[in-house]
Image 1 (cartoon, rainbow, N blue to C red):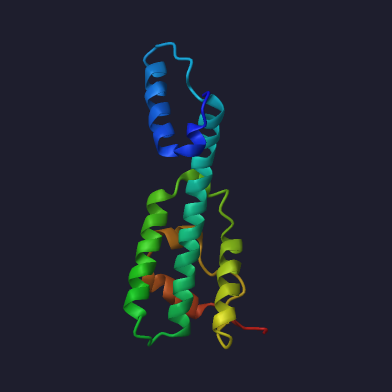
Image 2: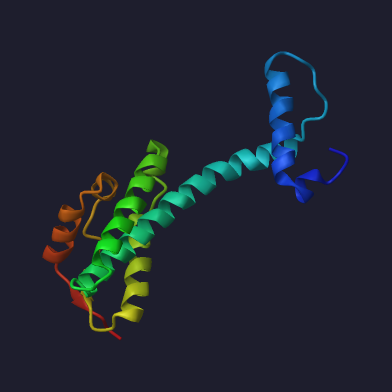
Length: 157
């Protein structure tokens, strides 16, 4: 496109491009499709969804660790609700091709490191005790039991 609408207002740009692509799909010849940015946005969409699922899993694990660190905290019910929401959203956004692209061990290690900075006396398993399927299933009682039953290592700090 001759102007910089893509940089100025991506919402309007996206609406215009989708209208143009509908016309192309109906067999009309259209010369105004911003192909380089359309291609970039489609590629980014997939990466965005993958990153969203990783982030939701990370948040759920961080909250599971909060429960392990402070099981009697007044925020317990809030944390349980948050975990349920994070895992429910992850499950809804998850697609089969993400299975090979989500490094659950890396997500877990990130959550473990962040948690141990705050809860210095907490012992947590060094390896992720859950499978991706178990997390996406979202059975909170099972997730908490698995965490409690997993061999833990004290924080080295």
